[in-house]
Length: 203
Image (tube, rainbow, N blue to C red; front, side, top):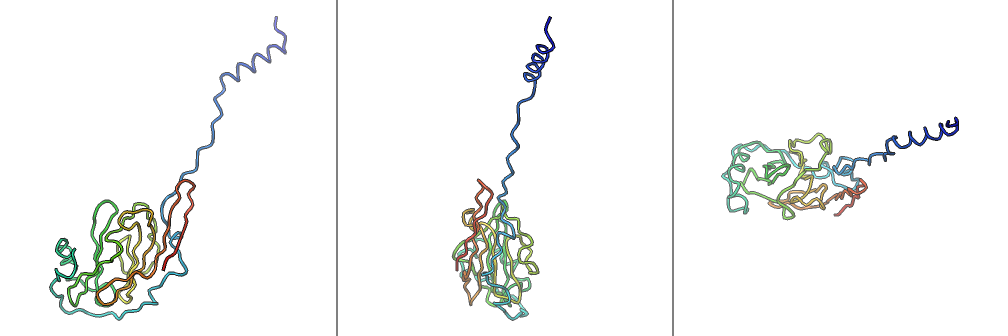
């Protein structure tokens, strides 16, 4: 006959053998999205610092196909935008069109001359990890990666330039004559290994 002590010990052994293994808590999910907080930059230029006089363009000119290498390739979308009202810097119009999933190419059209203006730094921007719809509210833009106003010469482009995630951030341009000048950039590199964002600003 087993003693009560022996039976208790045997029962403990049996329970231990059928108990589920101890599970480690799940790892926290890693967030790689670039948010409004990531893009916040007190040194960034503002729309008010670059005012422009809103103008009414009575009749749109012909698209100047020789003004830019992309004008011929994308003449259909550019001509469609050319007949619309100015939405940027007085008498210019920002045009953008899809180039893949969460990707857009962009250009600025001078509605007085028909000239097409593009940035020298990059031709397209992607926003696969861009979650900043509320960044710089109150603009006339209707695209996730662009912020602009009719009464300002400042154009802000958000996302990954030319789909390069290591350059993700906000890029600030101003139009002067027939050229877009990059005047500031807020770069955000997401370290997905520990979910930290490293922000750098460049003039």
